[in-house]
Image 1 (spheres, rainbow over the protein chains, first blue to last red):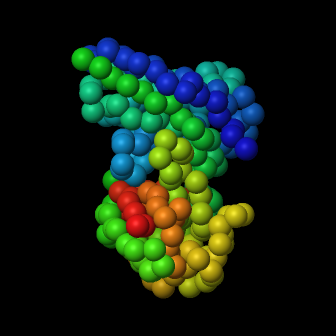
Image 2: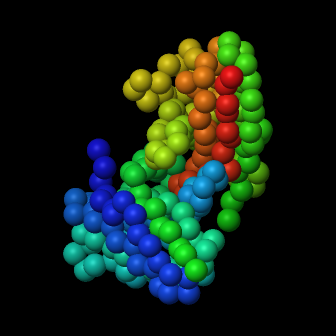
Image 3: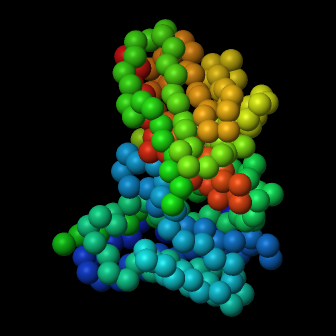
Amino acid sequence: DAKTTQPTSMDCAEGRAANLPCNHSTISGNEYVYWYRQIHSQGPQYIIHGLKNNETNEMASLIITEDRKSSTLILPHATLRDTAVYYCIVRVAGANQAGTALIFGKGTTLSVSS
Amino acid sequence: GAVVSQHPSWVICKSGTSVKIECRSLDFQATTMFWYRQFPKQSLMLMATSNEGSKATYEQGVEKDKFLINHASLTLSTLTVTSAHPEDSSFYICSASSPVGEQYFGPGTRLTVT
């Protein structure tokens, strides 16, 4: 069963910020929020993950609400190459999870146009 | 980040023949690898969990005698599609779990059965 809910699709103009929402109202206290993306005909690519604090890396920022029931992935300056399907996944992290697969929902198809 | 490779990247085979797909973790040892299948415009579906030195665990609805998985070393898992049929045409993606539980994906293999 899907543990996250994402919009089916979103559009964004090149150079603008893309804000992708994700609802995970049943998230457990030890579950992290992970974001992956899949560009057409490629394998999924890790973007970022977080537990409760906001996170930022060279690709994106992750904003998690205080109650942890939702989050937003932010691509600050979207480019055409950011066009992809973005997946929000919640899972427990750590070495003891090495045997647990990531389960993908339907994700959000982000289309960046010039 | 860690690198996972797949070979071949694409393959065309005739109906009734078998095809082997290799998945390698290039810079870490992966006790566990996973195999996914993705049909056009759909999300990734987990097929099986492959543990080094033991039998794979298959998801419900996946035929273990048709999709043979071998995980003979900590860096290599293979998926063999036996007696392939056109309905097996799909995008097959593997992933490998690092010792700290992070999952890295291969680039995928496009299988077309004619």
